[in-house]
Image (cartoon, rainbow, N blue to C red; front, side):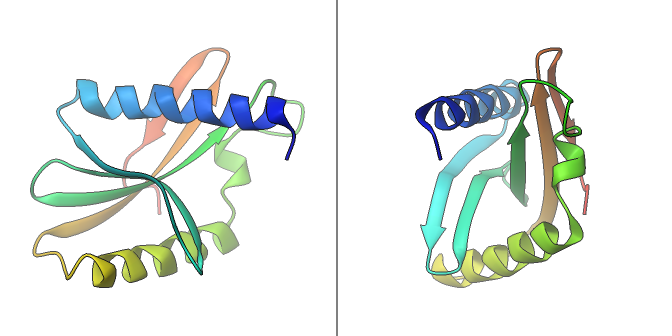
Length: 114
């Protein structure tokens, strides 16, 4: 991945992290990695553990960020989330899977997207 694309992705994750923080969520992990892959953001409001897949686009030439979160990617995030919950020793609350699309016109987050 080029430095420019990495910087764009980091900027998008910064914006989404701020979006959650402004709504009272606590960021638990950012770019959490294991042998299965990477989770972009893991946040919590205390009762819910939220896994957010973030896609940042400089244009919609190849579709929106939401369109890039395919069913295959959703399955991967679910597997990673299960691994994450085991890694942290469990979770007593509920789990939620969000999707975030960042573009020039701002941040859009779909709660319970998949």
